Image 1 (cartoon, rainbow, N blue to C red):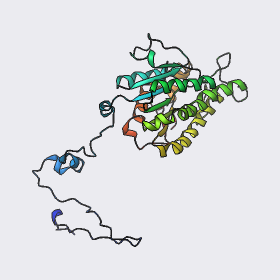
Image 2: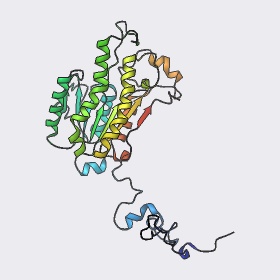
Image 3: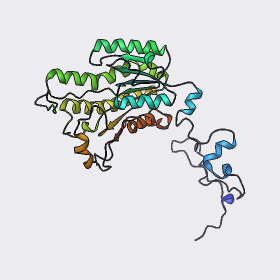
Image 4: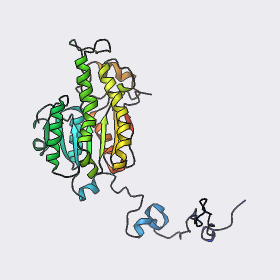
Length: 316
């Protein structure tokens, strides 16, 4: 049966009684009034409704990238493990987008490898396995921020020790000292940094991204037991932090890279594992950096407590 009532003739929906016993609740019309065929696109498209009043409509991704942030001044990020691999690519991408990046690594700043202008002035050399050095680094970072907000903290630093022969350290062969070092750097340092920089993150309504790994959910032929355990624990910690930090306007997420072409990748990993990956290749550090960029942007403003897997389908 055809409904002969035109859109413009549809009656206003009746008010619905409030189940709590209050005043009736007006039900909004399900279908908007008809617009003449010759009307401009803004009038016909509900996503452009705000533009008619001079305001951006919901179809406009205001703040989805970094352009709106530039108008309010550059955003600031703290990144650990910045001297190579994923961290190095992340600095390049965010610096090109106008962010100020405070980098942290065990190595001194190397201008030959890191050509960004502000690098030496915003680099903190720190061993994350040293609790005293970590606390001093937090004080240093706060001083560099000068009371200003922090918009992102990326906990990227990680270590994956091997045996003296370069082999995998299992649960039977990993020394206790190695366990402690791996857990301090890969697991404990991220939460200590986030707690130490909490006020700055809250002021910036910032985001924390922890870098976990595909090995946190499966036994890997090259990654050792301590490394895998630390990454699994960091994934769990991400959920806990997301719950605890969310009421303060701070989002906490994780990314779990698979086989990425970095220095931490064993020499024969690519040849052995690439054929087993549905995309038939390993990933690049820049592909990971782009996901980090998304999580630190306003496009991810309602994303928290998630772990995004970047592995070319390896875990399927």
